[in-house]
Image (cartoon, rainbow, N blue to C red; front, side, top):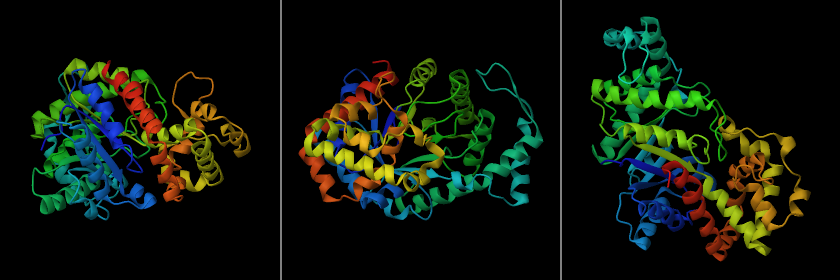
Length: 415
């Protein structure tokens, strides 16, 4: 099973926007692309929303049938580990193996030594085709990398082997995720991580490293754009070399998590993948949920009232809602408007404050990040929230389609 060159991970917290999301993909494909949509939902999201992995499969299948979509599409068991993977096995065909929690965990000294010895050919000056300067590799550096990442790659192997037992080899896409950590993985780290995965028989088709800079949920990249460009390009060259050296799948490509709304780096990524004729997996996740709130605000009346209630609930529970996402949000409480102020807003004002239009005078990235993690508040409203989604489905669907196509795909693909 192969993913395809360009793939877009699309989250849909409440499973009502699959058709609108797919319309955006179809529009981009009509411009000459062959983008594979990947509907993703994590165990945490299922827990908050009281949904099940089978719901995501149904949403994807229904959207594909509705639009008679002919391309590849997938359902991602997002950020799973050994303790959470089982419920996803039957209905998912893409598995994001989240091993970030195992980075830095100790490994047996014998295992570290065995890996270090297997890397003896790379000690000295490692020449990666396309990277101008050779990378200086010492035995001490390999020991450091092994000490940090062997346990994480062992965990990836355990999850992968479990999936092979359950689904059969070759019947699913394997992604390895190491992004939700504080320290980035440099290109030389990535090279040896890929060797570990190959040694352990994990045929990763996408890998999500932690890049330098901040990839906060639902807002733009914050960091040195030149440094990101260097890392991204070198990672692609490292992957190419690792495929040749270690026998990894030829379609192995980078995956960018928390990739929605990173508008400043989209042209950089577009230029580099075009330069080397490479693929990319971009995970956009919660941006669709934000468009639901925007659509409700624009609908006015009961829709606007629902949007304001969601903000009030998130404002009053900020610390609780933000805690699980602490590594991927930065909210200044002083920049959050009061509940009373928001209750006085028009639907247009609320939508403009939430919608990510860089440079718009009303846009507030702190407001947007708080709503991003507040889907639990909407979930607790149960049928009342779902009723609003159905009632205002046309305007919400238009917002979802416009967001993915106009603000994401057009920027990423130079449409």
